[in-house]
Structure formats: structure tokens, C-alpha cells
Amino acid sequence: MNALAPDKFLSNNRGIFRRLEDNPIIEIEDVPFRCSDIRNAGAVKFGDLYLLLVTIETLRGHPHIYRATSKDAVNFTFDNEPFMSPSAEAPWQQHEEIGVMDARITELEGCYYITYLAESHLGFRIGLAETRDFSDVRRLGFISEPDTKGGTIFPEKIGGRYARLERPSEGGRIWLSYSDDMVYWGDSQAVLSPRSRFWDSGRVGDAVPPIKLPDNNWLILYYGIRKTSGGDLFKIGAAILKADDPSQVLSRSDASILAPTENYERIGDMNNLVFSCGAIPEDDTLLLYYGAARSCICLGTIKISDIVKQCTETE
Image: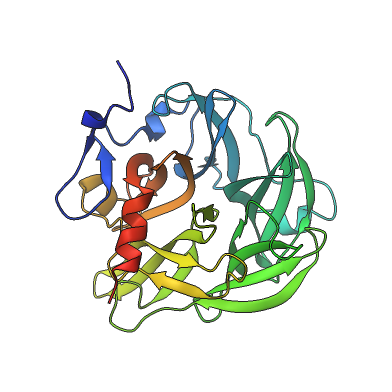
């Protein structure tokens, strides 16, 4: 039976996103060792495998990144050892002493680049690593200013330079930066800001790596937060950026494409939470892997053309 058959994905008649009927696909009980939390996963198609880099928190409260693989995109098997752990070597140690988490994967120039969050008593920084086989991984450097999150790299150069999105802690908006060597970044420009009274009025941040559209423009998915009396409300939305100048937003959806409506998305350690670090395009279908409130990983599908239509039909 095809695990990705259309009838396995359900719509709740509230939008264009369809959840897998059997969500969540990964819960703490599915991890083959004891842990205290599981959240967020970078995603990529690697040969005939669907591959996730999942953040798993140890019983001591330190996040590590584990590899999980699947033949059918739904049923995943975990490695017993971490793919990336906090480094004990300089200069990495002082920035990773608490943990590494929120991996995002971009295939570029025959290599897979992994951005991840490094946490220490000094705060957050974006780390960059590379791999060709998802067995050996090599750290390249810390590529952000302090207290910056996100870090989604474009899958090709723009104007002869590498490009990435990020979210500094101040301002709660998404910025674009460029680099000649993938290590030193600059020429930063603001791209997307919170919108008053909208679902993304609190802050916004980049979610999955940008996706190139048939017209060469860029589709980005981003998370938005709205502050409510019951706490932060997380949703995921979309925008389209100009092909040769991604600092220019061509269109942006008024409505979110994914909001917490199911119990596993609404109730947990952090309520009303959906958050994604990874998506896999397959023709016009996007497989979106996302973390949810109940310490779990979920899967849904959405037509890329439907996202574009929702963005371009915005008022």
C-alpha cells in the first residue's frame, strides 16, 4: 500500500494543506532510546531515501541532531548515535555547550549544506556544516551574528554569490545576506516583517530552504507568531521573492497555509505550535515535515501551485 496515496491525506476544509491521516509520524515512543523531547526536522530526498535530521533532547536537556531514514516518507528508522552532537573541540565548544538543533538542509553544487542552531550561555548562533553522504559531516564555521536564528540557504547562487535568509532576535523579521565563500556573510537587507493585526503580527522567521519556482522566482515558507492572551500562536505562511533580487517580495499570502487545529498541534509543552525546518518538493507536491506541540514530527502535503495561487490572489 502506498503510504503517500492521496486518500491518506485529509483536509479539514480550512485551507489548502492536507495532513497525513496517521499523524504524528514520529513521537517520543518511536525513538529507540530514552529522551526528553523531540522536535523539528530538516528534510531531503537522498537517493531513494527520505532523510530527516531530527532534533532530539537528551534526558539532561541537551539537544542533538539524529538521522532518520525512510523508503516511503512516512515510516522512519533512527540511527542509534547522533549525526551531530555538541562539539568538545575549540572553537565550537563554547558556542555549542548547551546543544545543536533545528537542522536545515540545502543541496548546492554537489554538496549538502546543513545550517543548525548552536546554543550556549552566550546565546544562539547559526552554524554551517557540509556532507556528501550523510555519514561524515564537517563543520565550516559560525555564519551569523550572535542571537540569530533560522539560516536557510538558497539552492543556487544569486548574482554570483551565495544567499541565505535568517532571523536576528531584534525586530522579529527576516533578513537576506550574501557571501562569496559561505563563511563570511554581509550586504544584509530586510525582506519580511510582521504585519499588524495579521496572524504574523508578533514576529516572523524563515522555515524551510527557499524553493525555486518554474518562473525562476523563489517560494519561501515562513513561520509567524501572534501573541494572544493564551500565549504565542504559531502558524506557517508563504511569500514569493524576486528571482534575481530576493530582497523584493512579489506577493505574500494574507492567510496562513498551516495553523494548529489538531490536538497534537494545540496541546503540549508549548501549546498552539506548528514549526517546520524541512520540506521535500516532488513535482508540484510539497511534503512538509513539521514539529508540533505534543513533542512529535508530523507530515502534510500541499500543492506548490496552490501556494502560489494563494500568494498572488492576496489583497
